[in-house]
Structures are given as structure tokens and as C-alpha cells.
Amino acid sequence: MPKITVNLPQDSYEIAIAPSSLAQLGNKMQKLAIGNKVLVISNPEIFEHYGETCVKSLESSGFETSTHLIPAGEEFKNLQSIQQVYDTALANHLERSSTLVALGGGVIGDMTGFAAATWLRGVNFVQVPTSLLAIVDASVGGKTGVNHPQGKNLIGAFYQPKLVAIDPTLLKTLPSREFRAGMAEVIKYGVIWDQDLFTKLEASDRLDSLDYVSEELLETIITRSCQAKADVVSQDEKEAGLRAILNYGHTIGHAVESLTHYKQFVHGEAVAIGMVAAGKIAVEMGLWTKEQTQRQDNLIVKTGLPTEIPSELTVEDILETIKSDKKVKAGKVRFILPTSIGEVIITDRVTPEIITSALKIN
Image (cartoon, rainbow, N blue to C red; front, side, top):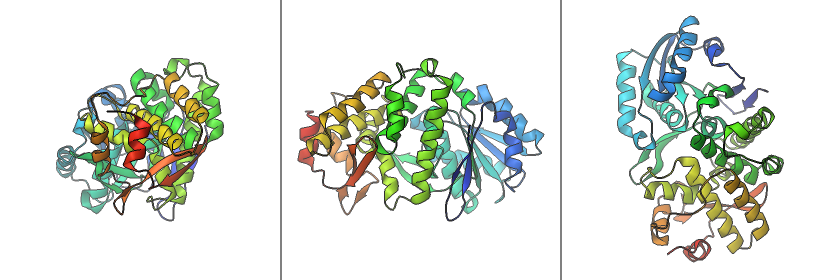
């Protein structure tokens, strides 16, 4: 698989994609000119599968390695968990030249990056994503953070990793639900950026489990998604403009996550619901056709992802929650809406009336 570079004015870095490469992580990190102290952050389940290989690789390359485990789940993505990371960093005498390694999915990556950005005003940070969602989206781009009780990822920082080390073979232990959640972000890239990727996904008979995805298609999914993310981030590192398109499906998706207290849906499932909603809004505003939104929705259904906002949520709930979304600017919520497969626009002209009409929920 090819190497991809995220080109930035400062702190450019490599996305290294190679099967069975976790055992070579230490060798890869030796080339980064970093200190010898490393703190590996993971959750218990992921660490049980891959912790020994990761730590052994680091120690065999001369790194003094310690570990910190955070319970799995979005409900642990908070400042209390970050405080516990700080405590471990302090106990192991991490220095400015030290490195935090995120071994896990998007939640672990976001928290590890935020801890790295804020401990000692910034230490090194390496992403080793273990879920499809983290591989194709969360591990690339430098968005880090934790949740506030009133909203997702409201506390955070832009902080780029030194390296993103992707080993696709780690997906073999990924639960099918988490694989499907990652596919939501892949479909997102097809809608916002890469029409050819979208078409290749449409041509696949089944996308609801890794068992039905060929090695060739998996390579396409990973490389094209990472390249799309790298292209966008290289042009707009801190979301001054273009990068906002990466939030397609996330405005209403984040609201659904928050309103269901991060317990009913995993992130990718909420994004899928948000993409369906955004498609309906785009049709309501005459931006794209019913045929195009049906193509998107059919792909989401084929992936086994949810498409409906839970019936217990009201439109008032949705409208109130999106007011605190990070994409609000000058008091107006900015939506990312499709105009064709592969192209979207950013608009603040989506009124509550349009949302109510498009979603048709009570």
C-alpha cells in the first residue's frame, strides 16, 4: 500500500499503511528523532489483542515504555479520563521529548491527542488506529478532544501527530458493528470528495462486514479515504474553510449522539443518520435530486447502518442541540450539503423551517 503525506506549513507527517506492520512500530518511530520515553494509551480490549506486540516492538527499539488503559466507550471521553492520563504521565516522568502512542479507535486517538497537546504544553503523539473509523478518519488531521456533557468534542485542540501507522490486519478482530460504523465515514468521502470511490462502493454486493470486502476493495477504501482526508487537511489545517466539508453528516449526527447520551449509537451510526438527514435537507432546498439522495441512502442501507432519527427525539430537541454545535458561526449553524455525488457546499441558510420540513419528525 502507498505512503501518504499530510503536507502542512509546519509538522507535515506520513500516513504509513502496511499489513502486519504493528511489530515494526518501534523501528518506524526511531526515525522520528524523539525521546526514549513512550506512554501507550489504549483500552483493555484492544490492549489484550495488540498491547504485547506494540510494547515489545517499542522496547526492542530502545524505548522506555509505560501504559495507561481507559475503559472503552464514548462515555469515558471526558476530562476526568484526561486527568488520569496526566497522572500516569507524571508518575512515569514524561518529558517534552516524550511520546504518547494512541493504540485504539477514534475515542482513544482523540483523547491521546488532546492529552499530548496539553501535557507540558505539548509532547509528541503517534496514532496507531485499530478501527476502520479511526483508520480512515479520526487518526488523520490533528483534531483532538473530549466531550462536554452538553455536546460532543466541545473541548479540544488542533494537534498533529508525528506519524499515523496503519496496520490493516488489526481490523480482523474488529466487531462488525464497528466496521459498519467506519464505513459511514468512507461513504462520506465518496459523497463529499471522491465520486469514483462512491461508485466502487456501489458495485460491491455487501459492505456490512469485513468478511464480504475483498483485500483489493479494502485497500481502495483505506488509501482513497486517507488520501481524501490528507488532501483536505493539507489545504485547510484548522478548518478556516474547506475542511468543514469533512463534517458532512455530523451536525445532526452529533445532536443524535448527544441527545441519546452516547449510549444508543456509536459515532459512525450517528453520522449515517446525519447524512440521510442532510440529503433530505439538500433535496428540500433543491440542491440535489431525489435520485442522488436515494443512491446515498441505498449505500448506507447496504452497509447495514441506521438511517432514521429515533422516534423519541423531537425536532425541537434537534434544533436546540445543534445551536451548540462547533460549526455555529455568528449565531448561524453551518451545514454541509451535497450538490452531486462527490461535491458539497457549506451553507448557513438552512432555517429551522427547512429542517422541520425535511426531517418530518414530531
